[in-house]
Length: 63
Image 1: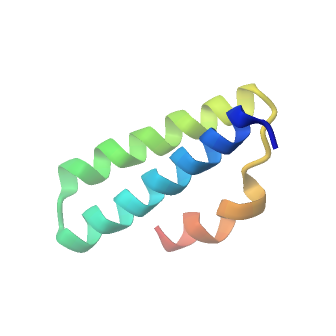
Image 2: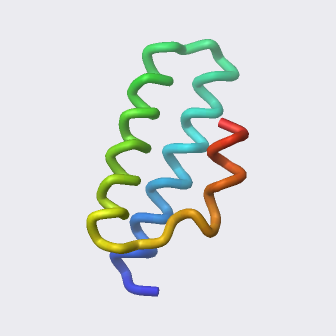
Image 3: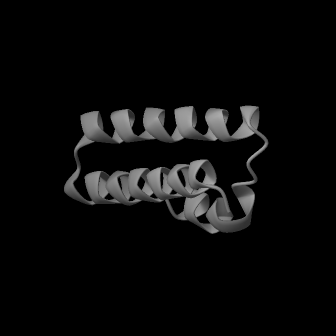
């Protein structure tokens, strides 16, 4: 895995974790920010042909 792919996966993981935490605290503003971050990262992955479905399908449904 390239450094770019590794960084992208880590950033997605961190954003999903932060989104879950914000939801648990009831922080709707932070939820919106984190959801936007995830959308941006997914778009970046798609533009560069990075397969993120392999590890985030379950997380997307849990979030």
